Amino acid sequence: MKIFVNFLSAFRIAAAFAIIPTIMLGWHWVTFIIYALAAISDWFDGFLARKYNCCSKLGGVLDHIGDKLLVCNAFIMLILLFPVPLIVIPIIIMIARELYISGLREFLGTQKIEMPVPKARFSMGKIKTTIQMLATAVLFLFMAVGSLITPSTNSEIIFILISILPQIGIFCIWFALIASIWSATQYTITFAQKLKKIK
Image (cartoon, rainbow, N blue to C red; front, side, top):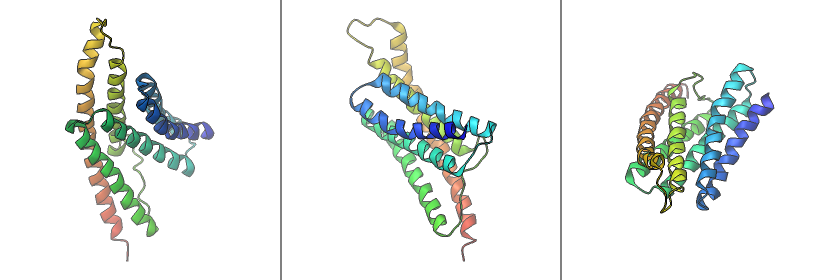
């Protein structure tokens, strides 16, 4: 089971890079399917690791790398697909947040001090990641549905989806930004507390 859980994390790493050529080639349904499966695997491998008590240091590292690569690569692609302030601004802030937290961890690492990811099932960091993945999946779905439109398209469902998906995606991105800032604040407080231990 541990091997399978690690495989799911490795799959997210592969998916993070696989969506780049599919987006560049305009294969929007392929992009959406790959991303959706990768996002689902994030919940699934955590569930299996807890249920079968098969957590490991390697698995934790792969899970962390997979999540960050999947989210950040997808965000960069979203900026290319939707170069509008409502999407670009929160994405830039959230990517900067990831670099900021990584910097805090790296500094503490040089001092032999760990700053682990909170283990609570519904920690703000996990909520942030979930909403980020949901927002990205919704916008990828919007692009996929949009690819179905032709001059002869008269499906009411398609036009309804085209009208509401961007709104849902943008709302989720800004919600994720709030969670991201909240989570960064919590990490900063933890960092300040651990900093006191450094002589």
